[in-house]
Length: 92
Length: 95
Image 1 (spheres, rainbow over the protein chains, first blue to last red):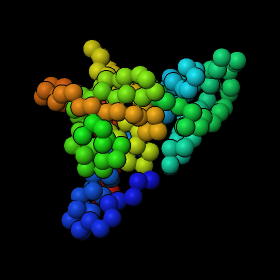
Image 2: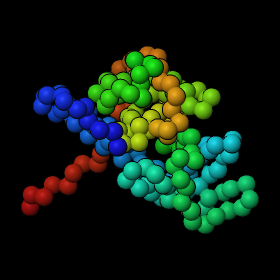
Image 3: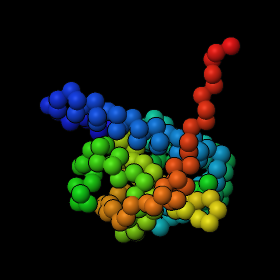
């Protein structure tokens, strides 16, 4: 997590915390909208995989997915390390 | 603003929400309307509006190299962007 600005006055701190909470809530709602959807992952080394999105852990370090279509077969359940992912897309 | 994106704080990120941005990550460029930036992972969420519906792209924070603000949204686009991921009404606890 990114630390809040050190030495800032209270008002500045409140504004920053408000901005963080608005941004974080929007991100969590986006993750919620993603659950049970087909998600396309772009990973390092030009690897592209598709899976049904399940959930993310709180620090966004791992994604839990189902039916992961990999170049060597389909994995029924899997955890994807977020650091291996460059971007992911889904339709709404 | 552009080069300091990763170091800049949540207030600047929030001020860029609903604007069209270009995100560079691992040699690829992605354009879209900025929905949010996760303050924990710094992941950037972009919305690509279609005639019907939209495509959402999440660029993971560790992969983001460069972010550039391109333009503001007009009123119609703004309303469409705002209509995504709105919270459902909170259930009233009054009898």
